Amino acid sequence: MVFSSLAFIFGFLPVLLAVYYFVDDRYKNVVLLVGSLLFYAWGGPKYLILLMTEALVSWGLALLIDAAEGAREKRLYLVLECVVLLGLLGYFKYAGWLAATFAGLIPALKSFVAPILPIGISFYTFQLISYVADVKRGEVAAQRSYWRLLLYCSLFHQCIAGPIVRYATVEKEIAHRQPTQSDVYYGVRRFCCGLAKKAVLANSCAAVADTLVPIGGTTLAAQSVTGFWLGMIFYTLQIYLDFSAYSDMAIGLGRMVGFHYLENFNYPYTATSVQDFWRRWHISLSSFFRDYVYIPLGGSRCATPIYIRNMAVVWLLTGLWHGASWNYVLWGLFYLALLLLERFVLRDLIPSPVQRALTIIAVIFGWVLFRFENAGEMLTVLKGMLGFAGGGFLSLSVRTTFLQNIFLLIVAIVACTQFGSWLRKTLSRAARNGGAIFGVYSVTEMLTPALMLLLAVIALAGASYNPFIYFQF
Image: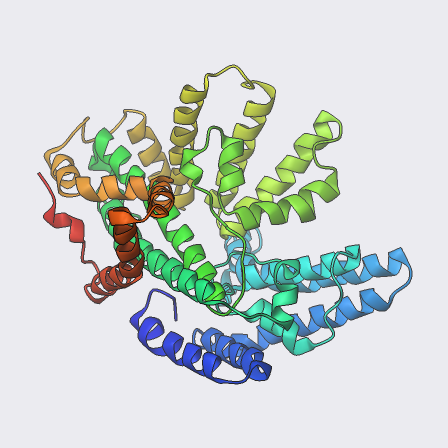
């Protein structure tokens, strides 16, 4: 089950919220825990045992760390936590890929059957490791209740697609929370906007990208230069709208029941540099690697060779975290090269407007590495974007596709900027003086969640329905 499914929107969510708001405060965590476990079990009941076991291991080791007196003993328990949880993650996520990679050297690996990847294992693994690490550092107290720790790592809001929520962020709210009417409204609005972003914008952009730069298709070699660029621009929009939509929905769902999750995206396509981009993109993942890998290795306050090593480790892990394939490793190393280039070569040499344009171009090329696991397809797209395309510069089909989707393109680009947030804040300030603007602001605030929900449901019911197709030249 996913957030952008009719079963979740009209079945699971309203039933769970109705029960949650109805029961006494003493049982609200029980309702959330049972609901979260049912939500997770929907995608594979047998993997519920894995989730509960990892939570049990983390719970026990955190208590042992809390009781230990020596730093060496505490470190040993943390290492054991990492070995167990990362070992399980490595087996389920990377064993099949590694077996296929080295099957030529070790014939016995040819018969290896890759395990099915449990839903959300990357997210709850990192959350539990961060919890135990924070207990070892003395930044949070060890949770005495196993069930509360299980609730933390299994909350259906974020256990499937993030963000990676730190235990310190929700520690007090797990024990006690009281959502206000403003929290509930904000949560509903944020969820509905995220749902529309996913169902209407991201899915529509995905359809255009799949048409122009398909994976596993036979038409790439005949695509034009503008076709490659337009397809990758739509994919660039899709991947942000998709990822950020799930974070929006998770933040909204959490707020409905009193959890205040931190923001996970901050308009990354408006970044002024690659470093700035990664301060804005998937913030919870970037901060995890910063706090638990980069800084412990020495950060940037060290000799240049050590700094480069630290960066290489982080970006190798960042690439691997996103998927078990060599293209993700290449994607991580691509950003490593860009960040080192910015730091040691290009610092303060390029004017800000030019740097902003170069950043988004670099990001688009990076998404080519991210999208295509097949090296041949990847090289075809890269060469095509550089002008070496089999279909020339522009084709009639690409021109038609562009004209059919020009309004989708405009709306999607605007959705990647602060324009909507700026407009709402501007109306809010103007509405304080009363009058007609107050009326307009009140009506839009009241209707926005319902309108976003309606558009999302229409799009989901129609599957590939694109409402922007009717606005074309």
